[in-house]
Image (cartoon, rainbow, N blue to C red; front, top):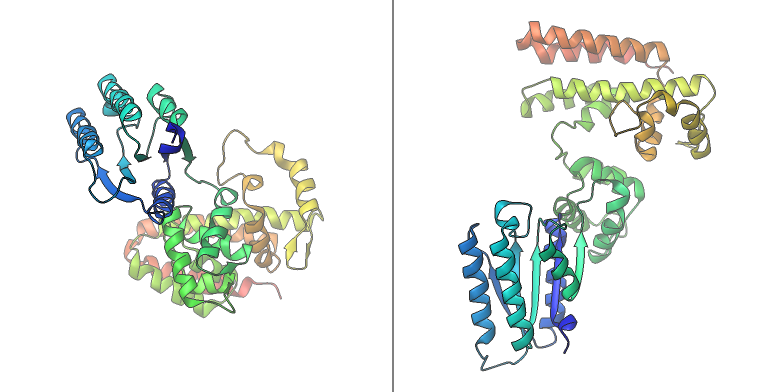
Length: 362
């Protein structure tokens, strides 16, 4: 057995994905009669690293009376990060010494799982080159996490429409651990013949992202007054600060204003419950130069997700440009009102909700 076959290095910035991949390999190996031994660093100092690697080396040198096929898993490694310990030359020397001894004396399989890591260091590059390695970056966009959501759904014997998967990310973010927990919960519900819809995600998955209050905002712009007021009351039983909700309302209203402009000028049309992708690209080409391009921000409509914009345009068609502009002005005024009358924040917003419900176009 070559060194390549005996060393597995799983690393990156997504701790859940790193752990999950290591466990998958271990399940495969243990099913093939390998005996597993687990080691984990206790502490953060250089002496802790030295003690951990020495314990691992000693274990490898001991003969197993029951099996000659062993897997040693060093998990939750954090001494390869961009930290004082991770940058220490002494730590790098300790790792190099351990690897040299292991390569020359052991036929056992060794698995390392590390998060986070500093990929710029020489020692990490050596570990990557030593055997089988896989890197797991932290997902920050829907396209990055989409294949993983589909695979996880298959493991739980459910399928999800794309709208449902995107809404799931909107609600819980791109943390694979949070997504996995919610997908497992949805799989227990089962949906219709194992298929999960966006409506079922909306009903079953709570909003876990701080500062995002989709239910209140969705119901407000859907002009479902009574449910919107109920959601507003529920919001204030959980949160005691209105400014995050105001920010969410203003953010949605800003996007709706620009979409309404596109509809009014004929640059965009709303057909079949969706925006036209071709029309959107032409609209973007005509106006994108007016927006900053250097980094993503909430003011840049052309950097927003196309599916998300296609969803909210269903509400845009029910409001005139003048009405949406009036909403924006009122939201600014409400901000100053809640500063002056902080104890009446909920009633101020409820009054705005009731006033605005009569502004919906037929």
